[in-house]
Image (tube, rainbow, N blue to C red; front, side, top):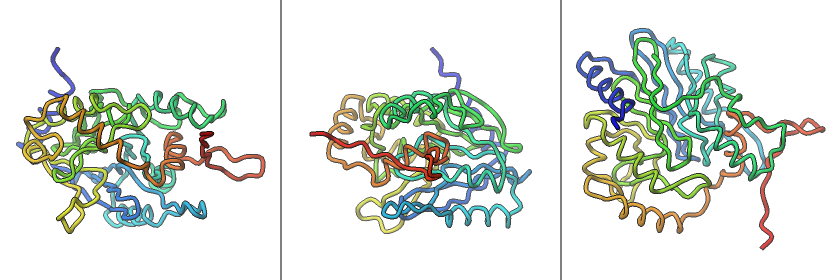
Length: 307
């Protein structure tokens, strides 16, 4: 069957390149979590989206802060941008989202993939979140299906469902640029892990090959960078062509079984992200803290092993 969503995204990229409809992208890099937050705007209308924001969190004390998010507020204000969207590529396991804090100050609608319902079900059970935790995606303003289309100012946007890292990963193709979350890293770093609950290496391979079918010139913006050995600077922008030619895990010519074998073996050596417990519990709630208990304080749960 034809992949109509992918075809629409590819045609959008080619049309926008031909007409010069390119978004302006300003990236804020959070060193403690190695996360790239992208502020994307349409230069014609000043409409913007904030993708994968970060709330500062100290795990030792449980304190939250918004220094990085404030930098984004300052930038948006200085550039006279109008926030239309706060977009999450997935429920992150390595940082806490600042989307509600930013939304309160800048406006905009909060969006994520429709498969967030599956993630909420998985982690709602894992953390025994109880009946007070809604598993219907109602913490978000919009739940996107594969192929969803909207505009950011005058820029066309096509949404692609790219599961594997998690069940709900989405890529946002805005104008001629793609914001792909945790599917791919820079070519010298490879690909994201697929061993979290609901993750699947085989599914990740198919999602990546789908992204790699976009035009080679497509600009690609990533959610993380950890500096591959031999590279001195952090980086978060590449192209589809560079990923096809040079990605160390999944360049053209790497078949599905070889990728799954590599990814599975590699994932078995990885420790859990430092902030996975607070991150998932906050992000599955759209960036909101868990409901306060009867003393007015919110708590993060940590499941204990009995072995």
